[in-house]
Image 1 (cartoon, rainbow, N blue to C red):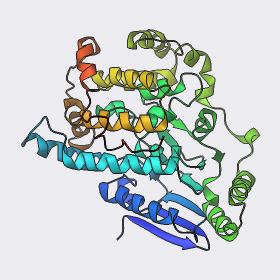
Image 2: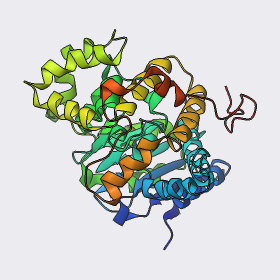
Image 3: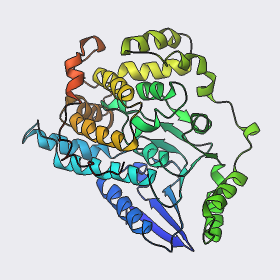
Image 4: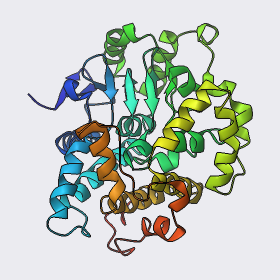
Length: 368
């Protein structure tokens, strides 16, 4: 069975990530199929709009297939541990190319962000022209728990969030719901999960119209839950705390602000626990990457992220984090170094060392 299903209904192209058992995690095969379909449909004048969804009801997409990536890392260690595994380079180039393509696509893309939308799934949602969440949506960039950092364009879309919410969510991996996503500007429409087929039918029926963007907006707005009926946003309720993080200049300043709050606030405690159990190296790398990329263009973000992610494949914590969380599932990663106090600035900087020259970078030709 194909890992990506496609269908054309009138002038509506429908793409389904078809890996329900893995919560639609993005394997190399899936991102290659997504890239091929999006490129083909961008040049197909018969298709006016695209609807992107995940198979099943549990997840739009739970992230990247990092088991596949880790296996490549472990195999490469036996050959040359200082060399980025070729499969990893290919995987991340393709995944980020898909994300960038969605951000810059010439036709409207509607993403049905129902259920779990994390990591690579949030990367797909973030760049779409019409981003839908539901009462079942659970979103997060939880990479700190696997010794990585929020990638897939997160250096861009986290920094687009109000106040210092992007920094907080990136550092703590805090989960947020559909109402939070609307407040944070990462989603555009909050719809009941029961209306998906009605939306697809309506989009297909109207997809031949010249003013398709306006029609999509009207269809989704009319189906949206009334704002007065939405529950309160937990993220919004913590604005006073988040605003204190706007001027922090170091990891220690960040910790000094949220640590006392974690003792009396469960929402903060959950995020703080995630941070303190995560990779100490990732804590510092995430902070530096989000600080450095505050004013990056989308193209600069993907160039920097590709280099940084490939560096993570030859640093120890990424593979170890995946092992502990998803392979052996012992939940006891042996981080290197194993505490925040032992992370040196030289070690952090080594993650940012260029793997390519400016001219040979795989994304050197991304349009400005």
